Every structure is written in C-alpha cells, then in structure tokens.
Length: 506
Ligand code: NAI
Ligand code: MG
Image (cartoon, rainbow, N blue to C red):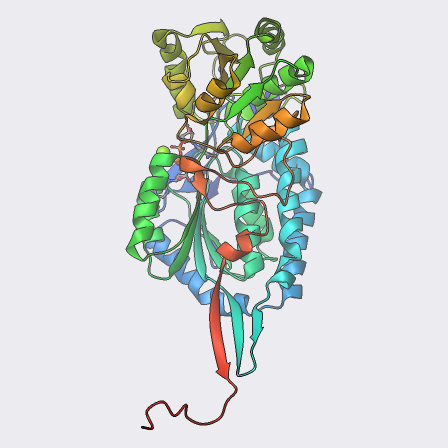
C-alpha cells in the first residue's frame, strides 16, 4: 500500500493519471494560470511529499472569477427547473461512477482513511446532489389573493455567491455548497482550502462539459490573498463559509462592506453525554468513533465526553482499550482506522493541546503524543488521546482541538451537568446516551446545540437542518432551508381597481 502513496501519480479507473501536476484557477469553464504565477504545494500528509501544485490566487484572479460568474448569471438564472435537475442529478451519477477515484484523491491529500472516504464522504456528497436535484421545482413564489389587489411574491436567485470551504471534508463541502446554489439558479465562485483540494480540482475537470462555463468558478489561493477582494466585490451578493471562528469574523467584516448575507458553519466542542442507564458498549463504540473519525478533524466531533459517575470507570476502561487497538497508518490501506492529520499546521496545533492538557491539570489516560514507528515518522500522525480529570473550564474542554482527542468530564447531578454542557461558546452538535424516554426528551430539549444524536453519534440524516447555536454559526445546511439563503423575494402588488383613490378630492 505504501508504494501507492510514495510512487508516481496513480491511475484512475479509466487508466489515465488520477491527477495532474498543476492546476490553475477554473474560470469560465477553463483552467487558467493564476496572475501572480506563484503556486502552492498540495502535500501528502502520510509521507510529506508534494502531490501537485495549485495557483496562488490574488485579487486580480478573484475579480476575473467574479466577472465570469456575473456573465454566466442571466442565462443560468433562466434555465428551467428540469435543466437544473438534470445537471444536478448527473453530477451525482458521475461522482458515484468514479467513487474510488475521488475517494483516493481525498485520502491522498487529506489523510482520511480510504474506507471513510468511500463509505461516508462521497456517498454523503452524492446525496447532497440528489437532495437538491428536484429542488428547483419547489422554488415557487406566492400569491396573495385579495378582492381589490393581487399580491405576487417572486422568488429569484440571489445572484453571484462566494463559497469558501475548508480542508477536512472537501468533496462533501463542495456538494453541500454548490448543490443548493445551483438549484436556486445562482452562479458561484468557490474557494477551496489551499491545503487540501486535489479531489476538488479533479471534480471540476470532470464537470467541464456538464456545468455551463462560468456557472461555477474555482478560485485557488491563500484565504487572506483572495478573501477580501472576493467577498467585498460589488457583484457578489452572498457569502457562505465553513471554517474557523477567527476567519469567519473577518469574512463577516468583509460582508459588511456591501451588506451581503452570510451562512456560517464554524465548528464546535460538542458534548457527548452518557447517563447511568446507557448501553455502555454502544456508547463506547461511538466515543471511539468520534475520537478517531476523520482523525478528529470534524466540526461535529463529540470531543467533550460527559460521563456519569456511576458508569465512568467501566466506560473509561473500555474506551481506553478500544482506542489502543485502533490501527494507525497509511490511510490508503482499507484496514487503517486512523490516518495522519491533514497538515503539519494542524498536527502542531493538536500537539500544543496535548502539552496543554497536563499543564491544566488533566490526566492522559491514553495517547498524548505523536504516533511514531514504521511508516509513521514522515507523516502527521497523532495518537488517539483521552484526557481525564478534566473540568469544563479548562481550555482543552472549551477550545476546538480538531484532532483525535477527547476530554472526559465526570457528572452526577443532572442540573449541574446541563449547566456545564451549555457553558460553551459553541453549540453545533451533541450526543446523549440513555434508555429512558423522558430523560432523552428532557435533556435534548435543554441542550443549546443545533443537532443531538440519541444513542448513536454521527447519525446524520440528509435533509435535516445542520448548523450551529451561538458561535458555531448561523444558517442551516443539508436541507431545503438553503433555498431561501440562495434566493431573494420580490413582492409585486397589482391593484385591481380602476381610477384614482380620490383621497385629495376635498
Ligand atoms: P480557516 O477558517 O482559516 O480556513 C477555512 C477556509 O477559509 C480556507 O479555504 C481558507 O483559505 C479560507 N480563509 C482563510 N482566511 C481567509 C480570509 N481572510 N478570507 C477568506 N477566506 C479565508 O481554518 P484553518 O486555519 O485552516 O484551521 C484552523 C482551525 O479552524 C482548525 O484547527 C479547526 O479548529 C477550525 N476549522 C473548523 C472547520 C469546520 O468544519 N467548522 C473546518 C476547518 C477548520
Ligand atoms: Mg486560518
């Protein structure tokens, strides 16, 4: 398997090279070199080797991408619902057809285990296109039928939208962002993350003959070099962002320049609550999953584990034993369960929290450092880690670590536990383990968070709203609510009465 990672460019299903050595920006249906001539390396986090290069975009490139999206808007906004449905559906079919190729591209550049790419990321991405394929037909206005007037509410595409996505789940992010915007009749400038986007580049290469030129443009580069020019461009009417809180705050400032609406999905520090009556083995399995899934680089991760005192010892012993059996290694190997962190920057960020935990008084129950040994030394591998003796006010319980690290907090009194669960600036997801129906409803109702999974973590249902409370962001994705974000209404009132009103006649 390592040969596959270390050798030259592997082959796609059809025998052609899986990816190319260099990508520019994808503007008006063509790959064009960035105007600066500078490039950014896309790395393989398993072995530290360069996979390919992308353009390092600048403000000029951002302007070119917006110009292409603006030019394409009138025609795309006027396509029929059937045309948009056919394209969205075909995108999903093409993704499905080359699922192993896209899975490998995600794994090579991001480090996620290939099984996750094949059985989670890509099927979920396909579902987003399925979800929105028929959505154009549901985009209807309203009629307000009055005796003396007829009110018509038109629903129009909002226009050119900027979509900025992160590096942890690239293809799922592309799907989550572009499917609803395309369904609504918007045109797009998409900015992928500069660290991980190899799958995204190949995806747009394949969509060249399917998505009309200029309808989706891909702008590569470092966020600060393109973000302001893109989001403050007067022709951009909306911005949708997924990523970190500090970057979101900057983007909201850019958005204030032309008063454009925003959708923000900003991570979390989600509570996974285990009650005394829980199915311990099932809860442990989910705790292991949320620790290692996508190397913990998941905004929804249940990284604050609230364990009832009565079951804590049994739980922690099983959790530790389970994590210590996790197979760490080459993520292209289908037996691997934990791959390398996506970037050196991310690895180092996690390492700094691994040092911080003991300084704050937490105990390392297992893990606590970099994973080393055969096949691991050249990669960004981190040991799956459990911190115990954690209090909710510690930074390791308050800040998003975005790595395979779970902080366990003990509870006994439900009232106090609820207070701590909600004592977080975030509120994106959460888990609850109990067999008691009343507890399940009472506790989930009190959790200040956008999604709660009872008795199975990551039990995502496409079509249900996904998004945050508090500083986890605003605007809901994964659902048809998004059609409202990507459209704007116009109210037209037709007076049915003839002549003047006569109010100034005396
Ligand atoms: P980031 O928020 O800086 O990057 C996300 C995207 O924003 C990338 O495409 C980046 O190029 C772009 N960006 C950065 N600065 C920008 C600017 N000024 N204008 C426009 N776009 C800009 O996230 P970063 O620094 O890569 O990761 C840091 C931490 O953020 C992670 O450790 C994690 O805690 C959190 N994060 C949360 C994610 C989530 O799913 N909610 C995803 C990625 C990161
Ligand atoms: Mg950043």
